[in-house]
Length: 162
Image (cartoon, rainbow, N blue to C red; front, side, top):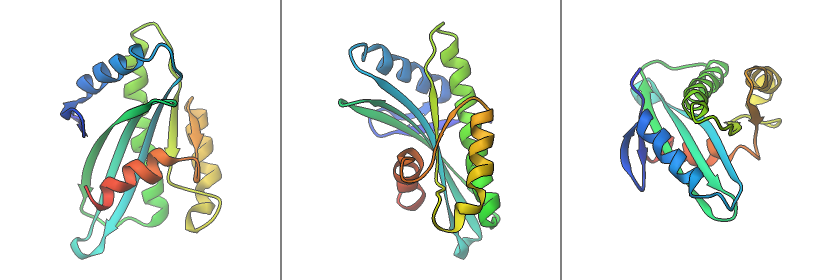
């Protein structure tokens, strides 16, 4: 799949361009802590019998702002909640893997957090343990609500309004 991302400050970018921009953000932030996050959110659209999935890559220079990139796509089926949550996690893992692979070529290591739009309260509580285990066994730090703002705030904004 050819991944294209939208950045409010850079416009449309390929995955390679996102990685270049992420690297320039990281290298330009030598004096501050940098967090790299990937999160996906989805929104069913029953009227069109589709689901919008948005995956976000966020580079957060702690205390100094950040930058994000979003990939948006629509699927023309209605997914059950569990299936949507698993698909969100799969998209985040896929992008996290691509990002890790490309950033790893620089001989430096940056941990990537996977933000999941699931939590201990509400309808998604039944899948929390399973999905968090999947993410951590894949080598990433998993964050759930309320700490998963990459998915619950950034990606969510583009499922509904983007």
